[in-house]
Length: 153
Image 1 (cartoon, helix red, strand yellow):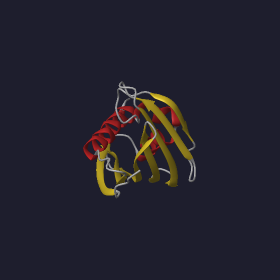
Image 2 (cartoon, one colour; image 1 turned 90 degrees about the vertical axis):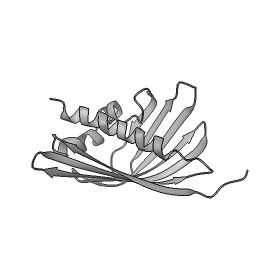
Image 3 (tube, helix red, strand yellow; image 1 turned 120 degrees about the vertical axis):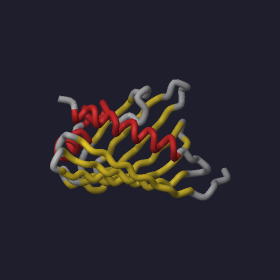
Image 4 (cartoon, one colour; image 1 turned 45 degrees about the vertical axis):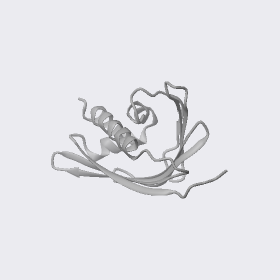
């Protein structure tokens, strides 16, 4: 098998919430809540999901696209500071083929009118795969659903 060099890139997203940083953080920490908003695309449904939210803990996510492609996301939490920061690494594969590996930092802060979230993802694309715009758009869609989840009254 011929391999291509890894390609590296990154992106950052910012969101403002009416909810407190503690409420937004809790939506990342609670498995049932996270599963409601975190699919990268709304049309996808998890076929398997488990989450051990602690440093060294793992998250397993499996889904299947309409075309039958099986997606696998394997995550490990590296650093968690309650209500302030989550750092995790994850790999993504489609039908058993490794697509990418990422390091993600999510930072939360209270403001006078709610809170902010900053998500920074550093990606290593593997063997010629490259989907930066799709990855960014999928992450934005998830954060939009997070906003609906935590700002709903």
